[in-house]
Image (cartoon, rainbow, N blue to C red; front, top):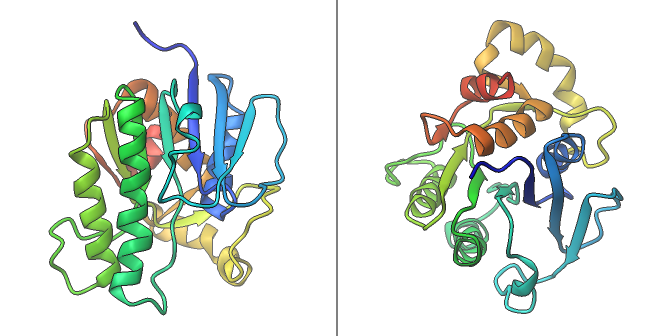
Length: 223
């Protein structure tokens, strides 16, 4: 039976990408409930929003009983690789993501899992860029889990949603360039509104590709 309204989980909602996706979910008429899992309060209140504060993303045993019955997870939690050695980045990217995903796939096998990866992610896991190898390994491992579907989103530059609180520190220095870049290279820029809509629409309608590039984000957002 087709799902008419969605119950979704959003991780990373205290970051720029996660907050943008969260705001789109809260504004969407087809979203029945949004659960956010944060280490610290996100500061957002909404009738459809539930927040779980949990410090250890490597151990969900104490909150597992609150994670069942969801249709999708929009996994926006991530860290920059700048200044990190590969073991640390691997732990905070691959290990953390897989722990959360394995827990959710066990509790919600009919769930659609949308993972925020990155442009130029290395699916071969053998390239020269450390972060791209780790992201590629994560994408490949997620595809082997027992979800209904897994989609790996590889956004490029992202335009923030008006009213967002969690903006990257350096965003203000280049944000004025993004409208120009979107004209010159439209498949390198999308808005966080488009990203959120693309995740919601791929949950409802599916998509022919599991790796979602910027051009696919534009198409999915327009459905």
